[in-house]
Length: 364
Image 1: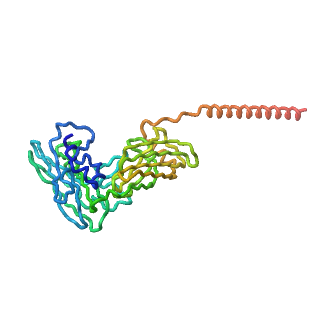
Image 2: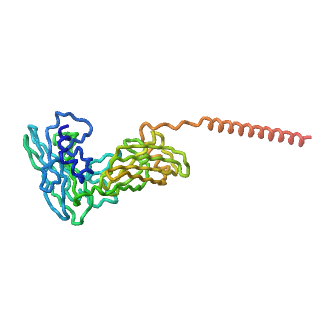
Image 3: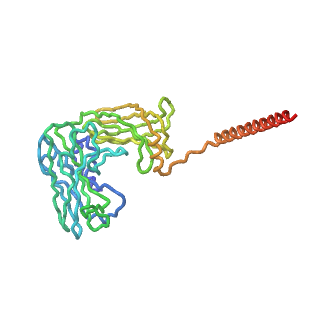
């Protein structure tokens, strides 16, 4: 808990241009994976704040930069274990995951159409640092700000995760990620002295049937099109048959956020019902709030689920509800077949009787 509290300096709330970075509340934090134990955490990381740090009261990188600027950022890695370890260092652009949470875990996520200042283009690819036992070592990250000026904030995080060559599951270089936690230090770059007046804006792109964790969803792909955080976001999404006012599926979620110039694949659950091929409409409303006011967007978009797509996703979905057979329909079909058979039998008997009468007349 101390790690997260350390980022709150007395001056933090007084600097208005840093208010949009509320999402970096835990800018120096541990990101959980699957399972681990606290005793396995024998390392820590910290930022070596440079002279162009906007506020020395915070423990993440919040830097005022200029076009074409080059500088090295230092991250201290403290290995408190009795043996040496390798650590993977990567700078990842801030993205928005399907839960409406800003995420720094992956590098190379598909860019939003509006993104101009990509923090991953300003920093090197992931690299490995070896730190001897009971030693502190600096990982140096070369930062190159693009010549083209940018507005707002370029947001990302320096992620440091321990690697170990002793595990059975090794990568091509003999190193595998064994620790299920990683440290992330926030990295926020701005050229403007104050970008807090940049108002949020949202656009909606495609709507697709998609599978996540082996469950089927309809996802509405929306975008935060401005270089500023979107906060206090609420979305209500409804799916209906095209041309119908009856709602088939609906989902509402609030207390979300979106990273600057990022995409959110907002999921609408099918409630484990099988996907049905057909033509549909997505009706989506979104609300956001910041210090400048309240914002509202309303989108409608038609989409189609093909039979091939529905069958493919239904085959691999777990806990899928089985479609109940229409017993009445089968009973009616059975009765119809029975009546048809009876009619055919009657016609056959009548034909046979007539043929017999004709034969008797011929013999007379």
